[in-house]
Image 1 (cartoon, rainbow, N blue to C red):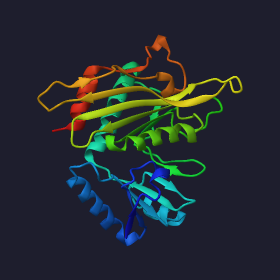
Image 2 (cartoon, rainbow, N blue to C red; image 1 turned 30 degrees about the horizontal axis):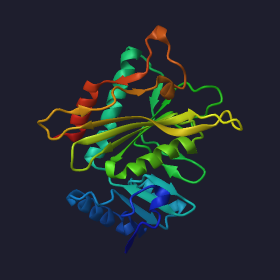
Image 3 (cartoon, rainbow, N blue to C red; image 1 turned 90 degrees about the vertical axis):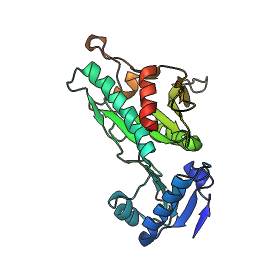
Image 4 (tube, rainbow, N blue to C red; image 1 turned 45 degrees about the horizontal axis):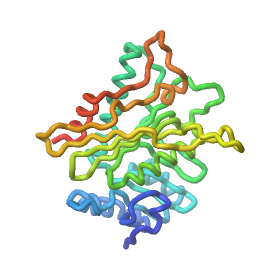
Length: 279
């Protein structure tokens, strides 16, 4: 039995997201049912998420951490698990972006140790929840006093119909880490059409008289890639898309070793979109 939307605001997902009391023997059937509905959906009304309730720590560890069930977020105090539908297009949206980033890093690292480690989809835990990123990075050499609990940069991908969820995720990563996560890239793919929105979120200084060190989480860059049909020109707005070197490596770039910000060009963004759309 399911119901819609009871915890959707807390998790930042669409109000159409269904909730189920968790029963281990029924998980696969529920997941497959929603997967089939999502594949057939032509109206973009189906949510790519499912919420399960009544999941204690032992069950979560057994079925989600070790059992391989897809988990986006776990809130232990409420027994809530958010499961996402992992579609090929979703995976391409963040993995193709990672390929571009890795290529740029290899360029200035000249094939030697670049000082960055790929931390992938390793889950991270805050005071109230555990969450898995789509892609994440962390420098090998951390600044003094900076723990390895949080990545420095995160990528989150999803349907453009769930952009509110992507913003929710970006704000959570930066806020929950108290600024240790320096930047979040979100990739929103328009379901059923040829459009991708890339956004960059990070913490910026917004001083007040009463709090000169105050920082706020802001969207600082948005690039839209679109194409009317596969035979028409690809349109790209607000290029290049720039990822600050310091946000990834937690230090300034060394000009002597040709380190620089990652500047993703129009041509790279066009190729990225073609790979994501893949038709």
